[in-house]
Image (cartoon, rainbow, N blue to C red; front, top):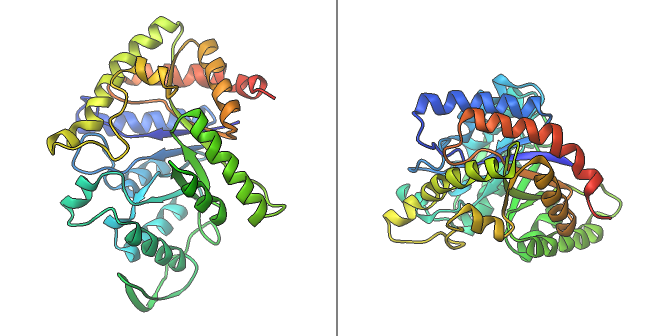
Length: 337
């Protein structure tokens, strides 16, 4: 069972220099723990999202690591000029020596897009993605669509990974899982176990029909995770940190009198745990919880949100160390048949 990380990059009350210094230390700890890939969010004009330029932040991660894969989950495509993003992708993939994982989406917040005079449009997203994938595979880009027009633009940068880095897709519907399967994308779900099982089963069905005999991509499940020596200590950390994360997640929506597209998140960590979207506890508690969820959801990849809210550097590093030493080795052994 490969382990990845998802990070909203919320400030958590830290100063800006402190935040970046600590996050780079945490990224190094993820690598030391043997984790597979570091997936980061893109948000704007809010303390939930201290990497409004994921490429800039990830360039720093690439410079401080050697084996950890890294990438946005996701680049909010309506906010990008495709030509510029093509070049940034090529830069990151080469700077990391082929460790980039790409994620693309419309962006989860219409408020953030509106500040740029843009919309979280599916049509804009789809055409921008078409242009980007073309541009990563050619030395002269020509495209004429509804929104973008290019004539023989010279593309002088090329990706390290050919034809381009792996693509990751966050899903919340059966339709999205079908799109991901047909395109051969890696997939991650933060939804319930039952919903995620439906996404993964449908993906496998479509994959067998459209990619016979090929290796199945990664089908992931993501959850909040805090590990400590005891259940009580882990819950103390998780409850406090989650309150900060929840406030940050909803701050911009409340400023505008709106709610997130997928609804307000669980108000407390206890409720998030009751919904099955997070776990805090001793290594034994966390291992049993995750093995059960991974088995029931038919996931072959786990993505942990190991740092959130106002978790301190010491709390995070201790949690990651305990997970790597005492939880991860048990996941394969305890997964249901």
